[in-house]
Length: 264
Ligand code: MG
Image 1 (cartoon, protein in one colour):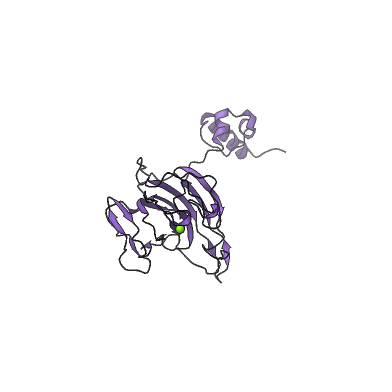
Image 2 (cartoon, helix red, strand yellow):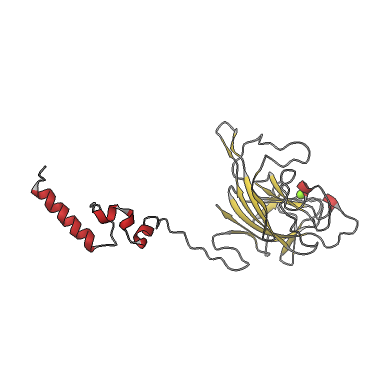
């Protein structure tokens, strides 16, 4: 069938334009560009390049908090914290660290969080005379005030493995024991995905957590089965939204420093 003259003119024009501007994507179908084999390798490679969105720049100094982090404790004050029942935090601020005031309660952040990357450093007491098992350097990092990453002196200290340092208490045994000796600073880097609840309150998606203990992966995206329980089974009985980070007083003089969080 004979094509109208104006359509032929348009095809000729597009063909010339595509041939001379190789780098531009072109809507005209020419034999060379519809066949992937006929494209130069760099042109084929371009087809899978994604240029948007461009990630936001973040300064990441060695050993320090990234520029987009919320610093919860830098050693100077406890202004981001309150007592576990509200009011002033009871913990002791000394030598750029904060230490549990035994039997005076835990502390929690004034802010609430959902999905986070959390960094903190902790140290159990050097003096372990007469203490073992769960009594040696017990504290804990409670995500959303409910789900505990155990803090314990687990350096040559036997206890049930789902309750040792870096366990998700009574739920997940750590993959390895990366503990340092008592009195030595250690770190946790925690990536936490909060649970999601439906309008009526039932669980839609459980929480997941990844934990690095002293830079070693010890929990790899494990499912949290519900609130941390000392006795009985965990459950998601109570729906909740974003909630504070809580540090436990378990009657041991555990210290913390360099705490920062990034909301994900
Ligand atoms: Mg504990």
